Length: 284
Image (cartoon, rainbow, N blue to C red; front, side):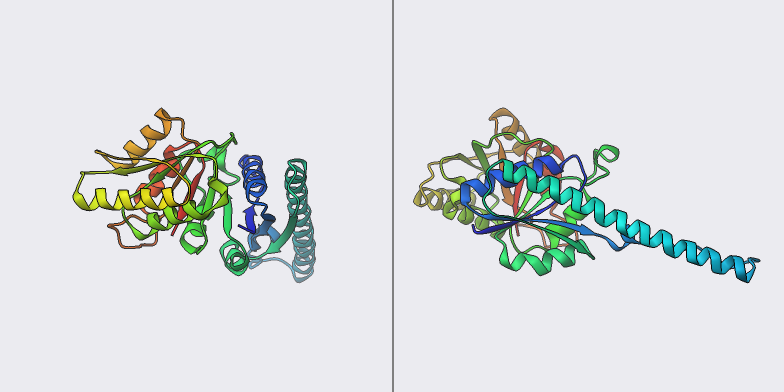
């Protein structure tokens, strides 16, 4: 891993995102690019209907005042964005990250990330955005858009950082979960951590074979992980295992093995993001 992109905003998840980014960067010696994107609505006031019985002179004066308001709003948004980036940079540098860049961009978040992700190995985002306290049961709207559009792994930061010592790979035999296994086996990020493989559902010869192949791949990469198949619903079984075994990081595919890719994140993935209080690393 040589570079990661951390999408920072003014939410309560920003500190955790920076702490997780620092942890990853120090383990992999990766550079960190902090990115804050100002949406077009943040830099322009809402258009006002000026039709009606407003005299021409008054209408002209109002238009001039609105134009000045637009300009002040845009300046404040940029100033706030730079302050968010400065705070994030300070956290990373205090943690000992050697190479940190900060960029303030105007436009659509997904389009900006799509333009930038080619040079990065990982994209990081908080589980919820700036309305987190008002929408505790909802995922951030930008999170779903980023997961759907990114071709690189997406690291979803939890609300609070804690040292990561144990990771769990949720395996379902699909291409995205195998991609996750392969990534872990080759990545310096997971070196020295305790790993676990878990498949949920009925035990079949195919499932057992796939799980053993995944276990062998991880063993070849230097990881000795336990591998189990447990019955039940994936979201319930995985969340219970995370809680019972003190898992610090969940690794999984964004889309399930048996589902056609749709306009929403796979239902199990969405449930895990809502239920788990730990970070989740997603693979397409």
